[in-house]
Image (cartoon, rainbow, N blue to C red; front, side, top):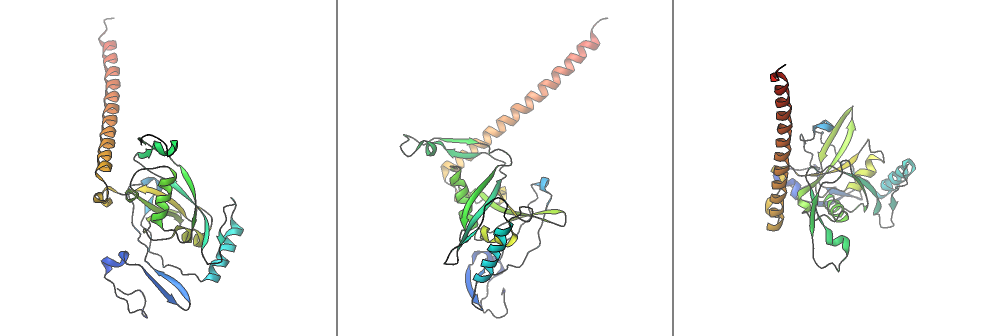
Length: 260
């Protein structure tokens, strides 16, 4: 397929997301990468629906400068963007962690490099946890995910996670998964500083999307241990619930059958 009538490059539709080109038109550098929007139906609390594919807006250096000035004038939390002489700009993004499964943390990282052994602990992140990252316009989604995991000392493979963008439009909340090579700070700049217009969310991949062959054997074994623990906890919770229900029924029966 061809994205522009003046371009002679041809690509198969199934290969489009695997190809990354840098093109110039009228002196403007363009990133020829189409966004990959997907419908996420597993998080019904946010009323996610499939978002229409939006055309990518390419900005010249002068347009970037104007955008940054406008962005900084609207910032209320002092997290402003800075434009460098080489055209690269830096700034902050906030990422909400919406992880359903526990993460594996290397405790030895907190103790320092001289720790005698590496110990790993699995635990759940608090619901609604938000992390702020300082990144540049060249950082990709994949690099942002890796930076988030590194900040939390997470030992899990970055391929297990995906970054989503969430926005409000016409009283609806749209959520779509970002391609690994998209640039979050650019999206933040174009949308402005308001999180109602755009926010970022880190989630696990859907089970069917995870590339299990990318994980090492110890990682896969750790996943199995976590699943076994989750299953055991759920069974124990279920047994306790039915035991309490049975006790109330037996108590009610004793009251009815008690000679009076």
